[in-house]
Image (cartoon, rainbow, N blue to C red; front, side):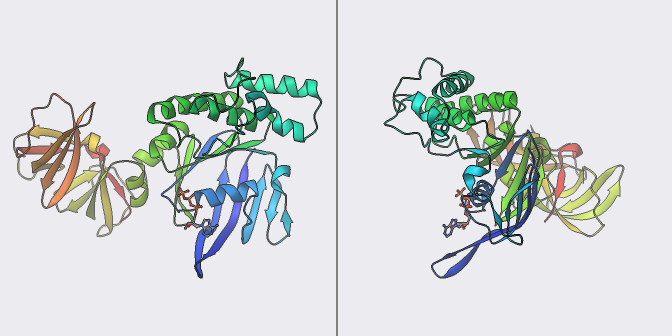
Length: 362
Ligand code: ATP
């Protein structure tokens, strides 16, 4: 079910000052996909999610879920949360500690007054789906964090929502469990094929889980795209920086040469992926650390995309070394294989394929 958000604004007053949490947001969330709202703390992700659910009242705009208007300032429509047909999973598992797994999952059906036999069947199906069958009599608190989050998911699913919304559901789990639960969640949601709206500030979670990501800043959507588009082909410096480690270098466009947009930077000339930018305009050259090719020795003078630098630090982080290289006063980050013969103080040459030189906004 598609969700359409038109001109939704929301301000709060805190300590006598207005905080613009949402700045007239326009957004279409496609049906039956995992759509993630990603952005730094305070950018308005939770406020937007709560406006969709109906737990927050916007100041302006319109929200449609599957074509039905659930909120409209102009038309005076405000459908209450329980009538919007949505399921929600929060950061805190929000399961009831004094209840069994069964009673936690059955709760939304009990308040709807369903017959006992129907409740039993639906709860059993939901628990089977999240692979918790056989644990229905267990006290909900006597489960691992990942299992508790699956109880919360089963409870959200049991009422057969049209849309399911998640607000940082994995942030209370430790790193390994978070990764496992993330994979399970992706599988579950893929099988269900319902619209999922997912809020996180964790870029890896967003990249691994989503069909599409909307990156937010200061109450506005900056850019929307697939994880690959957002990571490799961002338009905005803010997005390129937020979604992953990046070397961001001020650049001035020289023009198009041989199918590449050539820019001048403090490091010299760089041939980049072609972008529609006027000669003389300012841009940012974005190079991901994994695309820096680092070799011992000096660069041949005047060669595009190749620069001399001095290794300032080198850190072993598991699969690779992270190397900081000082060049033309800039500190750049490269990821190199553990077997590379590189040491602090070495003069090195690094080069970048033009295909991996991305130009984003200044
Ligand atoms: P986080 O990742 O930290 O949860 P977020 O992106 O979800 O952040 P929101 O919780 O939507 O951000 O908050 C957006 C802005 O609105 C912030 O500046 C926040 O301080 C402010 N805000 C949110 N709720 C209230 C409130 N009830 N009263 C006053 N200001 C609020």
